[in-house]
Length: 258
Length: 310
Ligand SMILES: Cc1cc2nc3c(=O)[nH]c(=O)nc-3n(C[C@H](O)[C@H](O)[C@H](O)COP(=O)(O)OP(=O)(O)OC[C@H]3O[C@@H](n4cnc5c(N)ncnc54)[C@H](O)[C@@H]3O)c2cc1C
Image 1: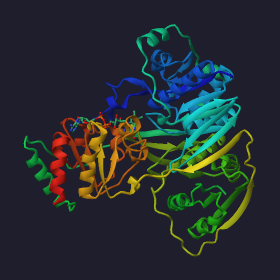
Image 2: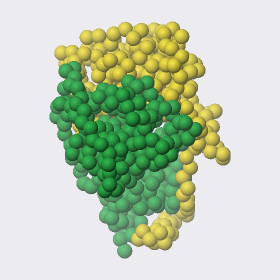
Image 3: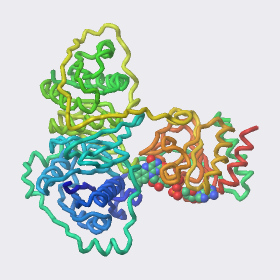
Image 4: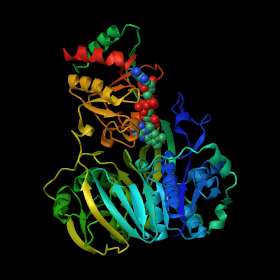
């Protein structure tokens, strides 16, 4: 069996993003993380690689900060990471991202499977796997909750809201996995130390042979505004809970709810 | 025909998108067409105002296998705007067709308008923390979640034409078997009018009885946060609420022992009244609540249940 590839995105941790008074986002305190959904994809790749005795590599496209992701990624069972750190990633839409990833995949070699998370924790566009499959000319199996390979055949159980289905593919494919497929490992000290010795290959965007049009986003951001809930926020916090409950019940009665 | 094209494997969703499509028809002054794999529903789209309907008929019943045929038709028609139903199958197909047509695609748009020669959309990002407004160059693809719009009503005087196209949608690399409907336990919480929701403030599975008693007192369904179903398996996966789970729109939501992180709260934003019960005054659920009690749910919930039973 050929080696496996996982695509991951290095995103701002939304828990550290603050909404300011004018509803703009303050990201100055926000750290980056591997997109949560992609941790499941990495785990799925690492498990399959262990089972079948093949290598599992990863590919990421981000801004210059993406270099900081290598250690965490490599401590999660990956053998190698290809990374492209370029400011173009800041404005990239799913069209550009897929063009970049597809060009890099062609350069990185032949893979039995290409794994992605079902969406990214920041933009959650849920397009990368399907777009990559078209650009690479291979099938896409999206929203997968169970995955196995036997005799070169990939069997995936997809979960699609109101039904599940089993899909079997021969030959290479792009797979997107749901968070429920596994529990990503928490790297121990040994894995983290080991990661430092594993290879990472940097590629420049210019070396991928893409035309200017391939790198021009079709979707442009016009504005980003923090979402604020307009709620009453009447909070009862006396020591006497019977009293708090009585006040809550009175409020609910006023709302016509009891 | 340039113009606005609609695709969904689910005909009810396609009729909802027609409502959005007909609005764009007015602002863009272009015709509206529908592509459907469901020949039996073609007339319903014409009746609801479609100027043209393509019935795409292939021998492979897998909805995802229609991407190539859909891309061919949209390419030939030089589509300006494509609205696709935001089911998971629809998102998969839309991304494939957009890739084939080298087009931009916005996922899960909440609003859509035509402005300055582009399609403008708004959608949630960062797990629901922020709203992002975007401009998509034509041809512009947009997926719209089911039930965002009401179905376009039949007008009775539809004059649109129906054309059937054969699709070569067999792919010997792929075989699909075992299509199983997911059997839900109990009622679907997405449609519940009242929801009592438990978080990891609950110590053990048996204590779900506390929530059950409160739910019985107010006539609610029980929901939970992701950890309760995915990590602890105390409730089935279709009971958890949030960005990756169910979106609920009840008149009353009571959350207990929930820290209120955005990925959960985004699923209850449409609730009419939100009540939070949590020991931690800083729980973000209080920020999202109409009413709250700072306290131990083991003390508060039985008192509240008793008071509401009366
Ligand atoms: C990409 C991504 C997607 C996600 N999608 C979802 C999703 O769809 N749905 C979802 O729910 N989560 C989702 N999450 C997880 C989410 O971010 C939170 O981690 C989760 O909602 C927290 O669950 P919780 O509030 O039950 O637990 P915790 O965060 O552990 O909070 C427990 C709360 O209980 C309180 N508490 C403890 N003891 C008591 C007591 N005796 N009485 C009263 N209160 C008590 C604590 O003060 C605390 O506020 C997602 C996360 C990511 C990164």
